[in-house]
Image (tube, rainbow, N blue to C red; front, side, top):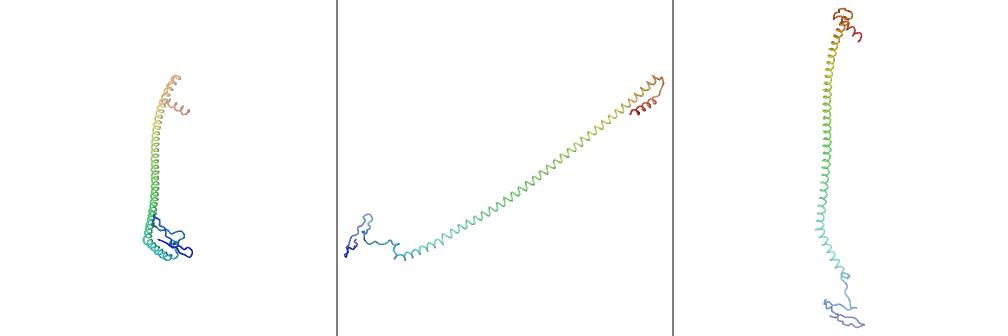
Length: 198
C-alpha cells in the first residue's frame, strides 16, 4: 500500500511500511495522520447522542433496579433499628420495674425482719419480766417464811427467856428473902422489867 507525499509541486507515491509483528501499516513521518475519534470535533454530535443514550439507560437501570433495592435495604435497617430501639426501651422499662419490685420486696422483707425482731425482743423482755417477777415472788416468799421462822424462834426464845427469868427470879427471891412467891407474881415483875428496858 502507498500514500502520496507532496514534494514541492510534485506528488510522489511512497509505500507505507508494514509492521511485521502486527501486520498494521504505519504511516511515515510527515504523512497525514487521522485524529483520535473523541478528539475529532466532527464526531462530537454522535458521541453526545450515544452518551445521552448510555446515561439514560444507566439512569433507568439504576432508578429501576438499584435504588429500590438500596431503599428497601435502608427501610429494613430503619425498621430493624426502630424495632431494636423499641425492644431496648421495653427491656429498660422491664428492668426498671424489676428493680422497683425488688427494692419494694427488700424493703418489705426488712420491715418484716424488724417486726419479727421487735416481737422477739418483746417476748424475751416479757419472759425476763415474768422470770424476774417469779424470782422476786419466790424470794419474797422465802423472806416471809424466814421472817416467820425467825419470829417463831424469837417468840420461842422469848418464851423460854420469860420462863427462865420467872424461874430464876422466883428462885432468887426465895433464896435471898426466904419468901415464897407465886409464879404469876414473878412473871408480872419480869414483864414490868422488860417494859422498862424496852
